[in-house]
Image 1 (cartoon, one colour):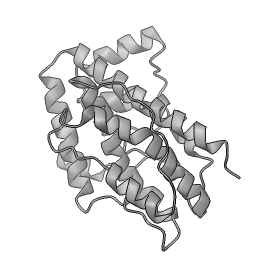
Image 2 (image 1 turned 90 degrees about the vertical axis):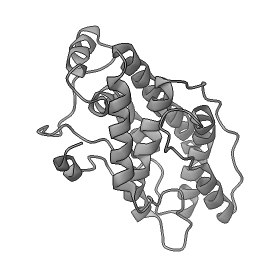
Image 3 (image 1 turned 60 degrees about the vertical axis):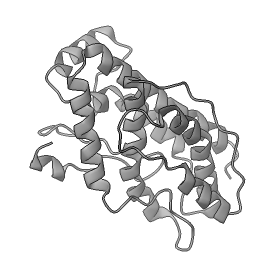
Image 4 (image 1 turned 180 degrees about the vertical axis):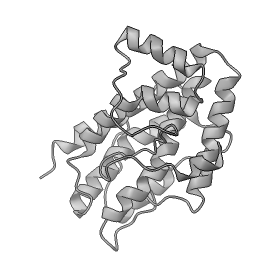
Length: 227
């Protein structure tokens, strides 16, 4: 990653499930027309992916799923304690299965976040929900899952600002070195993808998409009871 990449912005609304999605240098930030269910567009994207770093390919291919997941989490008002508790519970439904699937795989520096999430829920007097079972993730699939989870660390810095003072925020609070950590992950992702063919990147993309869908199902399950 070049020094200019350090200035990339968080192009996300400050609600819902936020994931840090850096834009290619020179892009204008408008919506992407490419969708994975349009073969002609995907073919063009595959050609482009031969020239783009993997981080940008994943960002483009997961754009629609990211936006849909954002919409699913939009009903959660984190400034209200009961909504914040439900928001954390939704993440607690999705996260443990995903983390279990990628532990010891993918990025060597990856670390789980579920312990912090469980601590926050305990401090709020909430029970842990039944987790959603996640598919096993090996090879490229592990990198796709970690792309979403690692990105959410930076998205958390937007969300934590909405939480009232005095409530536990270990899960949403980004680590001190969050910027350097994200850049290190993206560099490792780009390097790993460069050692493999397009099938590897396709598998990582599909896994990232499934990860967004995993979180979206959890959000939809718990948002129905919000008042």
